[in-house]
Length: 218
Image (tube, rainbow, N blue to C red; front, side):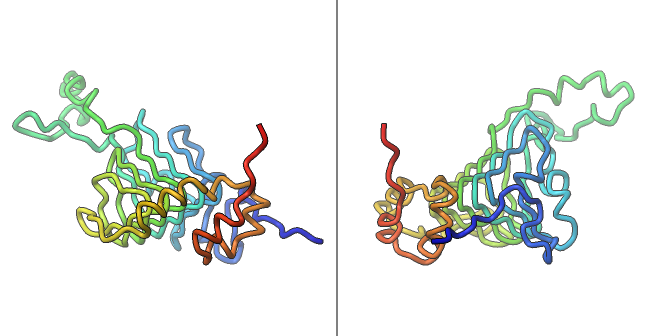
């Protein structure tokens, strides 16, 4: 019996006839960005510049972490903590970056409070031109509607939309979400996952449990 052949997670363009689609893991070079296998970005203009056009104000040390099997639509933006300004005085303008003697006051814009890393879980779908603000955590299996501005954490398997993004509904009950998180199909061995693509895409949770790989012997 011939086993099905898994897709290759190391190629930048998984669809050679569609150069607008790039896999992020083999594309990104910044040590501040981590992307899991098969997470992709789709953009007809220049998807190869994802790190500079879609991850903005990324001066560190906060990291952007994107899980496996995430789908990022055209124009998705991540605003990082470098966009922060002081808000405790009369003006929010960052005078020191303009140079001259103003630069002597650079201490006024360093060490501004941040919200930590921005983390996107596994199997997340970020719609066209959605925006994720600094320090947000988006749960596994979540869907973010097109044009949304995500300012708060998104629960696992939630659908959110709007500006600011609000919960529209949960994709499954709490009990079923617990089952899905326990299955964590995105961590299955690639060959096993390949053999059960149809179940992962269109089966029930019962079906998914029935084909889950046996836990390793300890």
